[in-house]
Length: 82
Image (cartoon, rainbow, N blue to C red; front, side, top):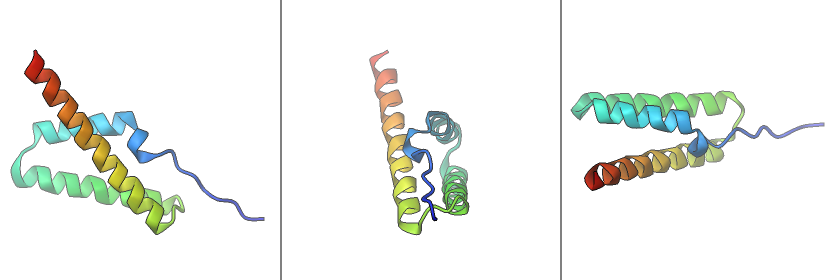
């Protein structure tokens, strides 16, 4: 009997999303670029290690990136309204 591993969707990991947003707000230029790439690489490696198929891993990473972008925009809009 075989089973399928289902990871909690990366795009719904609120603490990780807020951590990424904080890092991007606090870091700029090439340092931010390198930190972001490292974070995404680490996430991809973790999902792969959990047995997530390659295509699903990519989808999860892309959805996480979109969630981080959405949060950055939402925080920016809040700051503009304040």
